[in-house]
Length: 584
Image (cartoon, rainbow, N blue to C red; front, top):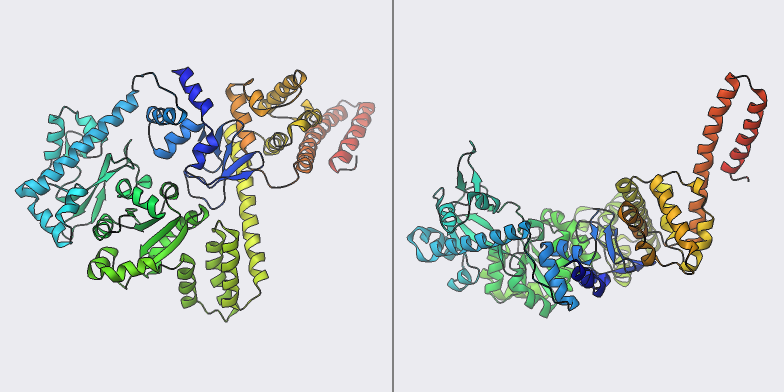
């Protein structure tokens, strides 16, 4: 099996695998992108085609093509291996499932049984009649109830639990599925969902992974969801995505609403490319999923800016990922479910004429601040510039900046200068945090880590000459010193340096440090010039350390009353001081 895994890795190109989920931009020898695993405005996610690895310096997620697929899809290593084997054209020898994989399969099956149990009670049993009437009053058709396998969780304390246990599963399995909770005293359990209309939550492949239960009356909370489990992570979920993804891909457009009932209502009226977030916050994982299928994202919300504020971070990420974000502006006080049932044609016209999200922000800012006053101009620019900054396309940025300059009646160059200033600050912040993250995770001195990162970014034919400039005495950190010694030994026996070949000659902690250094996102600058600056900074650190040691020796010599030794040491200190000041 180990040989097969290596064969799969050899046949896969990590750039192809990652770019099928995330737009990549060339950055020196590497590629960079906004991290699909956490929210960020400036790329800190790096991919090395040479070493076939990735790492995010914001959240520390990293690995190879297999671990990327496992993380991005939220599947086990075994499931990732099967899919990547198909892509690589490698026939897998059957393997035993790991305990984790067996447990995940149990949870999938328990959720499937629960979904069928709830659906049977809703559609075939008297106990489900109140819930059925509730859903019909909300306008849901019989076809939709069947298509989405909607159900009802009875008010009984343990009817679902007893049903699942009778099917051969343990109470522990039931608790791990999130469908039951422990009693306060720790003895026994009770069903988590009771007296609620049930909406099965499905993965992108259509497997039931959890549930959302809606109260039939005025109970609070109105909705409760399955707690996080090995198969359910709310931040990854897009309700109805398994059914909508084909239409989203066909139309290159996704309509995003907040709740299940909104999604079902739009689906009933022919808008099959609709998904729901189950909350206002858009996650980076959801955006990554959508960007694989769509170029356009239509957000459906009312004119209340508070709702938009909650999704603002996600909107910025979506725009940075290259999605064109537009706003479906609903009538005051209406949610999508009500709006489309009351006026289907009117709603569909709103979809067709949805304005860019920029227009919504502009209209909102102009309604709250006076564009004629300096303070008003500052406030409006403060709200709009982040929207423009998050756009991936430079031409689009220029167009919107021009519009903003007209609205504020100021020179567009001023806005460009402010935007460039904000972008430069953000890039510098990410770069600094990347070096800091590497220093922190590997416990490396920042300046020395940066020197090695620059060393590995210079052209291969310059590596040897640059290595000669770094003395062993320059490096204080033991790990980096070991790496430098390994490099010097390796370069004695080869004509041309190749990162991937050297990587194969080291292992353990040394290899992990090496890989992190190679992936550090570096500023776009002359690498030789930057290497020289980094080397000078490291040597200066060495000289400061040596001067400190000599000063300690001077104090000892003075106590021992050895004036000749004191004089000699002072001359050495003066020489080091000149080097520290850059005069030698």
